[in-house]
Length: 336
Image 1 (tube, helix red, strand yellow):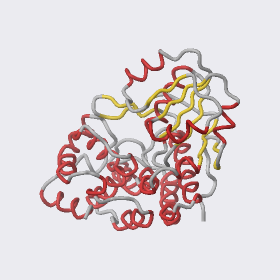
Image 2: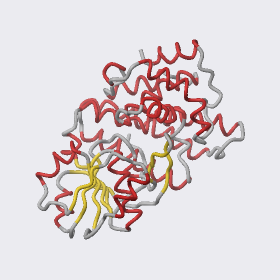
Image 3: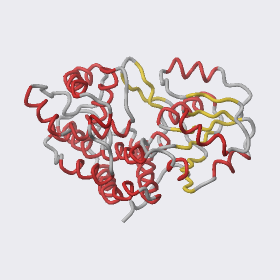
Image 4: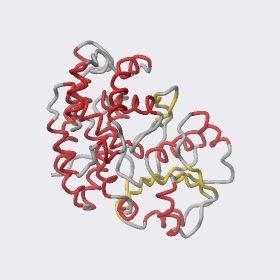
């Protein structure tokens, strides 16, 4: 059964809609990354007036790009999370019409209004962007390696650990108060993810659409609540810490999935369920497959309790986490 009553930005699922959209645009700017742009560019009836390569999400960089926007009438984001966030910031600064074309179902950035700016080793959400249309093109997403499509579960799977963290924080009087309706919605996302996971593994378009519909509703709920406590917790915080400690990243959905596996084990929060969902979806979780070393995870865990305080992140299991030999052994078993 699919998730009922999905809300969010106008979205088109299918093939060829981007060609129709850009045919009706005046001069436009493509905000993209090399891999999706190589797939999309040859199919377009007209080239953009300019191409902005996404990747650097520091505010000073994005502001400089926005200040150079001239002679364009629309912004089209094509790619992964950094392309979606860059396009949102340019829209926020310029007010130009925005169209979003995600190349992977890996993040909910195309369905959220704020931009995830990188600052001082952390993430800061700012801005307010609403696209004219989100275009989910099955040919574009299907051109990506199957493993990267399956890695898109992270920002839904994260509800498993985030809800636990939110309940912990609410009981201790921290941050946003508990909301039964929002929590129920988070649990519904998890149920839907478990149901659709085998479709992702098989490469079925229906799996992609159902996963993106979860992302679309999550984006709406984040805005409606004014926060994302139901889907962002210690699993995301470990991902941000990993980026700071290592100076690099891997695909967001896969990194967050690693965070869910590790933090659910440290929470004592049914770690078998996220493992079962990830395996059913065909999501990569092996450190070797992801090009991640155990010492990087260990260093990230050791840094995590200080990092969440320094960054002012929501209260979670990370705040009082004692990273001793027993905790590291638990984390390592979770990734075995």
